[in-house]
Image (tube, rainbow, N blue to C red; front, side, top):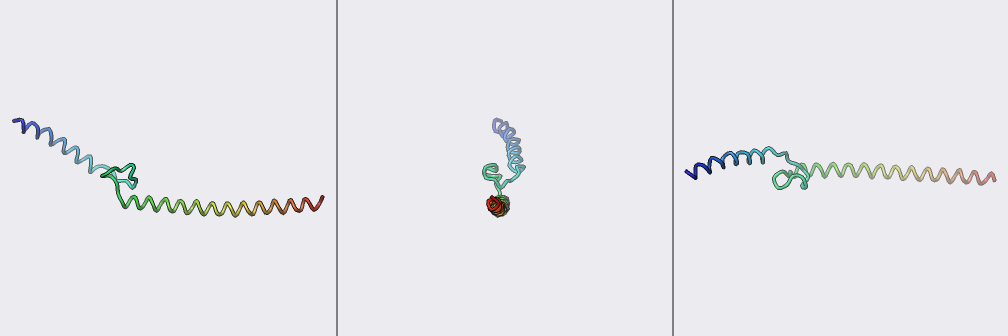
Length: 86
């Protein structure tokens, strides 16, 4: 009799637990996914996204440095012109 009561309680708990585990969305972030919700494919996708973003930031940084150098050269040229009038 006790065994039947325990099995009646355990069955719904087991169903809820299994639905909870299978219903979880996987993530590529090991900090969020835990042991069962982590996906290597999604992690690789996150890595590629971050690498692409880093490439874009590095490209923009290079552009801004070249722009800054051109502006500094312009200032130097104008300062030279100004000094020649004095």
